[in-house]
Image (cartoon, rainbow, N blue to C red):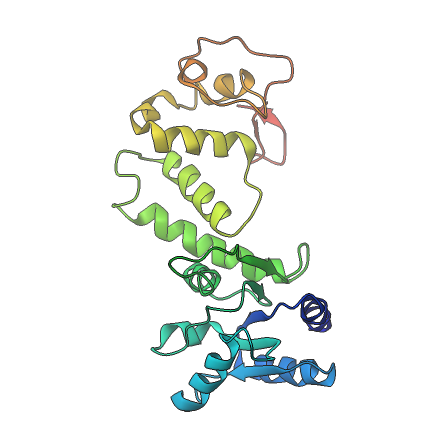
Length: 247
């Protein structure tokens, strides 16, 4: 929370305001108190408040001439009619990961409107390599499973390749660095779903060895027309007793 307060202070000095999303209304209240202790004109928008009260705060927030520095709210506010946080603000912070990827995506679209010319910038404040990543992983898995099981998604793709596509889509949505080779496979399959039959357990490792990071994966790679290269990608199977057995 201290980090968020410091970020808002810096953006205030640049004449910018910030929209902050948290999971719980109690967190929003605590953060709002901290912001005000830092001398910031911040406000909390809660789903349990009267619509007129929330509307007044949001109206001021969307007015570039009003000295509001930050509004703190929860993902739940985006599921009810009312608050629309766009107009004067183009900076956002996701302080905590939501329980569902759709909530995160809905939040990061909250500052975007038709005809907008200024670029919106979002920052995620959940910390890599900490317990924050447990929630991040749970959200990712839920989203991947939803895409994988949805017959309307990738209708021409079957089996494990659906998983590769789903993981790629979710990684992009969450701003994660995706696996380079499997991301290249996903991109090719999105453009050429008919090529799915070319990716088999017997050919995947050979395709990877003919490709390296920075290249575009092409049908020549997939059709095994290109030779393996010294710095090509080597796929390993980590499943059996942790032993690196090449596929």
